[in-house]
Length: 237
Image (cartoon, rainbow, N blue to C red; front, side, top):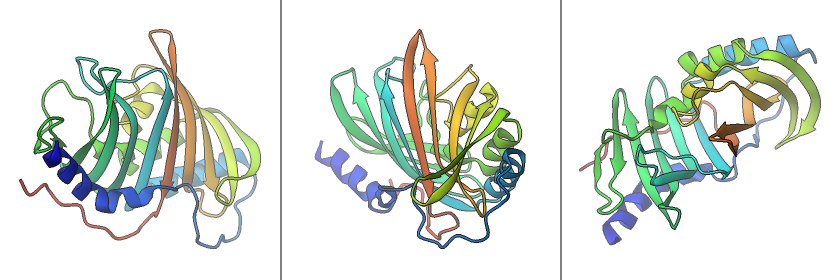
C-alpha cells in the first residue's frame, strides 16, 4: 500500500493543481454576439485549437465502471492534456462498492499506463479497462465535432460560473460524447449544458446526465488553464 500511495502522490503533484477549476482569472475581451449559432460555431473552432488544458470530471448518482468486471467505479478524474495526444491523471475510484482509492494514469501517443491497484507500479493498460485520459480532451477528434454537431441548441442566458459565461444547451451525438468521456459514456445521445467564456467561447464547464440499465449518473466537467505549459512524462518504471 505504501508503494501505491507513493506512485499516486508523485503523479498528483502536477495533476491535482486543477482542483477548483472552472474559473478563469484572465480578463474578458469583447463578448461575442448573444446568438446560440454564433457562440457554438466559435466554441467549435476555439476548442479544436486548444493545445493544452487541465480537466476535472466528477460523477454522482449511479456507478459507472471502467473495467469489464464492474469492480472499479469511476468517481472523479483530475488530469492534464497536452496536444496532440498526451495526458496524465489521477482517478478516484470505488472498488467493489466498498473501498475508495486512487489510481494514476498516463497516456502518451497510443500507449496508456495505469498504476496497479495493489502494488502501485505503473503497467501498460491491461485488456478489459476502458480508460484513456488523453481522449478526455481530444480537441480535433472530440470537441470540435461535438460542438459542431450539437442539435436543439439554445442560449439559456448569461450566468456567473467562475465569471460571466454564456450558458448553452444542446444534444450531443453518442459517438462524440463517447470520445470526450474516454469511452466511459457509450451508446446514448446526451443533453449537455455548457458554460462558455463570452469572448473566446472556450468551454469552462459542462454538465450532463447519462442512463445505464435504468440508472442515472450525473457528471460535471470543469476545464481551465488553456494553453498553459506543462510536461507529461512516461512513468519511470
